[in-house]
Image 1 (cartoon, rainbow, N blue to C red):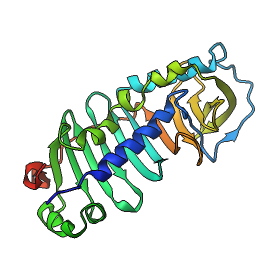
Image 2: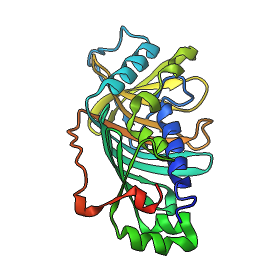
Image 3: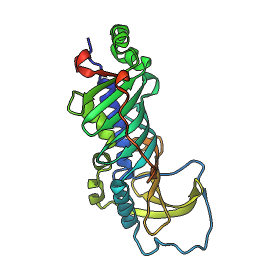
Image 4: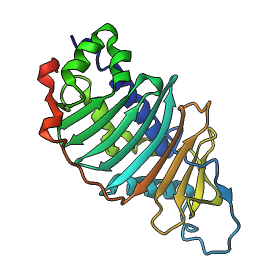
Length: 255
């Protein structure tokens, strides 16, 4: 009855993970920018002046991966698939939020440890199950489906919560040149643009002694796929399982 139900889940995870990889310097897209970002002139001492662009990128990435909590939001497009994520993360513990693939539907997601609660909307069921959708939606009745990260298709979805996987540092070992761009303001914060020689990708990091990635951006046509993802490190995150009355055990639908 639940045949093919998770094809979108796998696609979403792959696309979002690919876009997140853009935040690793030299992954073809450690990138960030805002279309509204405006270059600003300033004589403020630059706390990053003594660091190479590559070192700044490495430190910003390490800081992101070491964060105790953060939010990640934006849209990534890879191989023609666009995925919009809005997630609150507690690395090592899980995450909560939404994952949406264009017109194919939206999934509410809560991952706590190895337990996954996901709640697809009606559009998702119709786009993935076709004629079987009404049977499943009647059974699910708007509830979250409880399963495990080891269940089929769930590992890739849950990997969106794991920055150690999506923000791989292996890309930093390629040695591809990264250069410093102009200073700009982004959301009222002074940031430094980092650019890579092989494409039009850019990453904005805070102009502070401990640089933090603020936003990643890769334009349409970028080899690694287009993306615009924003990050807020340190944003309070609480992970709470849905009430039991709103949960359906995945075994009831063959998971």
